[in-house]
Length: 346
Ligand code: ADP
Ligand code: MG
Ligand code: MG
Ligand code: K
Image 1 (cartoon, rainbow, N blue to C red):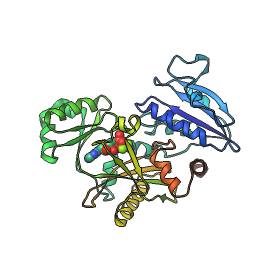
Image 2: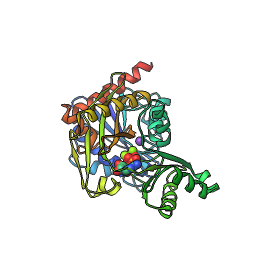
Image 3: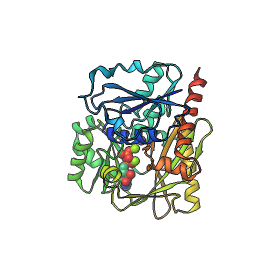
Image 4: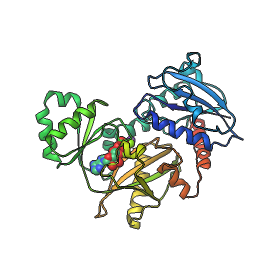
């Protein structure tokens, strides 16, 4: 059987996808699978890479077609990835990858794939939509104000007043459809709020402004289709005020504590909320559910990520590793879940 590894992509998280893809390549069971590389350039072209029968010696193999200056004879139409006895692993983060668009395309060409389906991907990518859905099942979330670009353009003063009437500074300003902290700013006053909005609207016309809270960051890994399994929570231990893109991927000043050293009650609550959120959002395959835990042990669900960072050092696979499911076995499980999901729809 073949795994079609789709990586790169048009989103701001292109480079993160390449890191995840390399980890996957290193851990596939090559006695069962061949891996067909398909790279999506930053400008959205699809490039057919080599077919691998064994673990590559270095990350180089993924960078062969880096940028649009790659070999044009290797460019393909997206539907040309279709083949029998293969499953697609879209290891793409952010818009155009994790948001249901690729998933819808794969459904249309009738290819099995790993991970969340169209509705779940879209609902988890859009932070405003996620909040609405989880509100319906009473999952605690921090106070927020959604602001569409059109509303902001029409009457900025009204937006300031609405935010200041509902929230206290500092506030977190986020593009609704993004990840890896791209476009997110912490605003301490009105002037910063204004700049933060301008920044967020660079990425999306839908923006959410949230109450900033002092809290620890707790994450639960989820695996399954109908039968949902969760791990004990892990903690992102920050020595930075804000877990931004640089600290996530560049400075490496983030430590993970697995399991999180938090009260048992908070562990159980986080797992329970994670499971409810996953089920409500219609999850399949995998997701990572992220929480804030205050020093009063209040728990708020922050977001659900349907294609979480997937390098060997990322939280999601590490949580499973600590639960007794090593990286290679995790990929194997995800493949089986993807195939089950596909066969069930037949
Ligand atoms: P992304 O999808 O980009 O990861 P998040 O909503 O998780 O977006 O925000 C990124 C980071 O910003 C979080 O991991 C956290 O460090 C910080 N953050 C986000 N929202 C808040 C908030 N309301 N209060 C405090 N910190 C926050
Ligand atoms: Mg996210
Ligand atoms: Mg996050
Ligand atoms: K998300």
